[in-house]
Structures are given as C-alpha cells and as structure tokens.
Length: 127
Image (cartoon, rainbow, N blue to C red; front, side):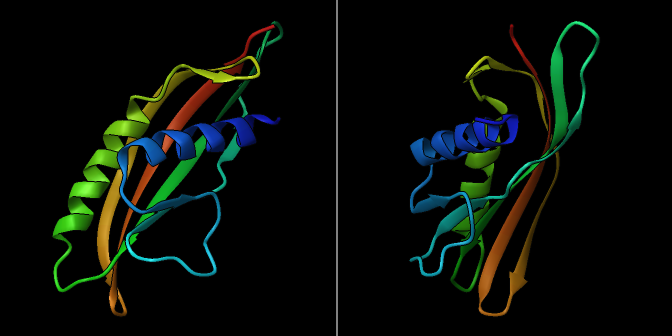
C-alpha cells in the first residue's frame, strides 16, 4: 500500500475507536449524523539519499446537525487528540515522525455544522 493509503487507513482506524457515528475515507452517499471524513492526504517527497520519506497534510472533517455545535466541538477535540496520538508504526514499514495540528475550524453550512482540522505529518519508510 502507498504512504497515502497507509496514513489514511491509520487515521480512519484511530478515529473509529474514539468517535461515535461513521468514519469514512471518502464522503458517504448517505450517512446518519454525526459522521467524519478523512480526506485523502496530500503528500510530497521528504526523502534523503538513504531513506524514503513523505511530508504532507491530512484533513479530518466532522459533520453534525442541531442548533448549536456543542456535540461537534467535543467530537472535534477528541478527533484532534486521537490523530495527534497516532501510533508511530503505521504498517508496511511506514513510521510517523511528526503529527501536528495546524488549524481547526467549526462553521455552519446550511442546516448542518462542519468542523475541520488539518494536520501536518512527516513519515518515513523503514528498509
């Protein structure tokens, strides 16, 4: 599996363990609220002459309803803690070096609330 696939699968699995509702690796056609989507990571080369590495961004978006985003804010905080506490061993030889939350936002979109957190990630592949 690619670095992108391993990272996205790791984030999805971690969020499934801590969030109520569904956690998806692409926007679902139908889903009950609340649910989360882990966007496909955007990665660039972070290699040296002796090892392969990737640096990039991964975005987690939570969706919820209601008059106020109280439940969404709590879920977003839990998701941020979970992603920052990802296991360094992602599988298939890929290891996380750094996970840092860069920005987070909650906003109303139509009749729903959406919370988004973006993370910087650095990872390398063990030989």
